[in-house]
Image 1: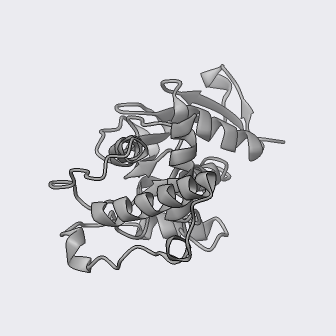
Image 2: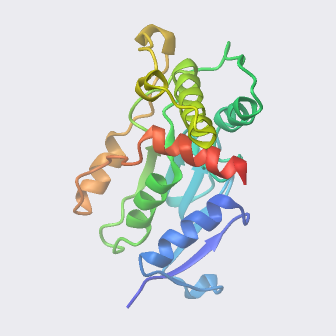
Length: 226
């Protein structure tokens, strides 16, 4: 029998993403908070059995608090993560070659599918093994803004060349120039050890985000076009 889940929070793109993932994990949604096996609250200041908040937001009372840093939702910008990539995608599509990146720090971008996959495991865990405390969640690798822009420019160029049948051997073989580690600046990654161990305790290999950055960027462009 599935676990009865009550979700509290603003109905936005992240709410829909976690709801969809929990449905596929076998959750049974209930409007009755008192009848739920687990209450999941989303957003700043929320309380429940499991609370999920953006990395810089305060949470209310909860047995388990998950703070998500640098979340990337390809469908649209949202308050759950930085909007840098979405803003750059519109400018690149409009043919703007220069994008202001000064003052923008490197980010540990995390695709929403990786985030919701892990959250579904935590939420659907049996009560006797469900982790407690605070878990930080982010991507493992830092991406400097210049790295991201070069990847985005290359992907968009390849897409438009394919549409216009204007590819050349050079355009097909081009790869972004290596960006020095120093260009990412000094950025501290959230502590992922507790999340990794919590997922291992649930019988997985731990925290290993799977969606490649290039795939995430292609999805951003695809949704921006629509």
